[in-house]
Length: 147
Ligand code: RB5
Image (cartoon, rainbow, N blue to C red; front, side):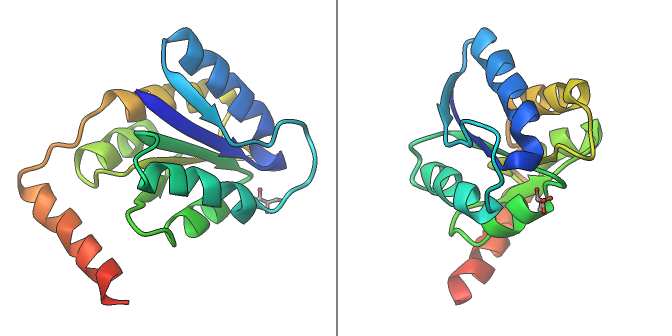
């Protein structure tokens, strides 16, 4: 499985730890930056990560900023992206099971690195349940296609 990842300065340390963790687990990683600690605008990172996932160049994405919120707002503007901000284990699991979320957004100033790694594991290890949830996800796509 190939994972696209990116962060701004608010999530830089978390991103590096996630890359190390997922690489050790055998995942292929596309790192869209930032590559060194510098202040950047989170939409500039959310955009290439979201496009890589939307174009199916990567299977899932992970975005980290200070809160996770800015990244999720930007990512969800890209057609085909369902980005979820998660700070707890239940949400990280169920956003895959029920929402078929394809990008996990984390807040580097909200959760510690240990929690972030556990949420990442839940996210990448959980498959969409389909069934009754498919029709609900399809309705999200219908809203997206209205515009
Ligand atoms: C950057 O200071 C901060 O605004 C950003 O990382 C993020 O939290 C935005 O949602």
